[in-house]
Length: 586
Image 1 (tube, rainbow, N blue to C red):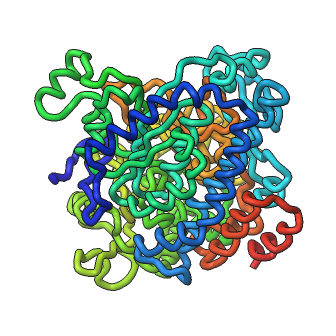
Image 2: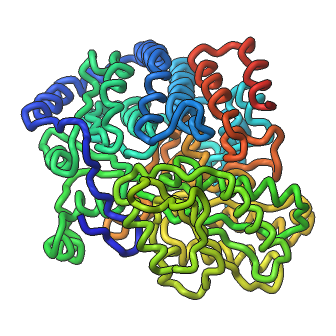
Image 3: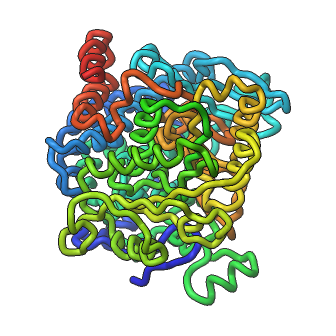
């Protein structure tokens, strides 16, 4: 398959060695069962849904060791690898945490008619409503000390009217629907959590087509989802583009959700070839069904200059590097462009600290299809790219790619591939902006992200507390948070963590039309079931103690911590807290 080199994300080639595809008879039978059971699902009571979630929590927890082992094998890692904790964090832990959150929301609906918001709800000066959703539990307060999160609502929502916009599927019962979920292949919790959103938030039964890259998880998911499969509310199917196209056009599929490439989304909506371009120009999509998608991003990190000490630089260098190295760079929320102020005296020390961490971080297997072709496109455009990692890494023969930094990009080069295209591999870039003051820099950085960097999924902002003592800077930061057109924003905390929190929304900034979809439309996760969210904002202290276990510099700590956190979500008990705290402090 030819690699597409245009704005957005790449067209990913099909994985080889995938599980045998479902034939048409199997797909037809699955959709037929879902059609027969969709109205029954709508009528399943809240109490019965809570019981189903209890079954799901038990069954997902029972197979978590096999789940992680399968992911490690597929990605060329061992249980002793310093990166093994990523699979615990973004697989069993994220899924079990989300199931626990959904259970809490359903319990609130049973008692109060709507999920209860755990923090304050306020209106900004312009009237926009902001609801604090995290921490949600005492366990969150213990293990995420110094971290809070908000969901900002779309304009027009009022403080008084906010509850009426929540859990709409439980307030206004409608006819059942069959949703097709096209799960991503990079992170193992994406498919399950997308399916859970359709089932428990949007009240739809689900045909989940596994991505060929991680179709090896299919049998495990069938086991974990047994309570829903046996009820006829979920079916898991297999295949690549041909099977996906068949299901998308199937008359028994009422709507679609995809996590993947904007190129795949466009192919579903408009078709392919010259006919697709003509349809898009005429505004006559091939697909006549509702479709939502989470479709990638060139994720920016805005570094606000300030009085950073050497230890501050070391901490934030590890923070930024971790945003790339997680999952070998195969994340739509990975660091792609670091933005710094031109002339800041800490700019080069920060880059040097990052280089030092990369040199100590083993190169990872390039397991995602098309990695070497995508990597070559960027390094051919930027032969000055710096490579770090095992000697010889990046050759197709050894299956690895080196961590790669392209620094000093010209911010005026609006067509630079690093600004316009998601690399989706072990590579990121850095650029600088000239500004008259820190506040002016902040305004320019926000405009740069909104206007020049492709995508609207997630962004991160790093700002020293001493910088915020200047009222002009503090106002510019808050103005920037409000003006950034991203679905998730992290302030001193990787914005991509919004994916794993579950209670926050995950998706693009709203408003993309089908003919310019960019990072997508709609949201998932959103455990409090907000009906009109605009974006999620995570805030944290500039430096957290203990250092978050997902930092690349924490080594094997992550496996112990996230395994125990998964156990905690499956069986909450304060007796588990000391062991987790000790592991995190190690």
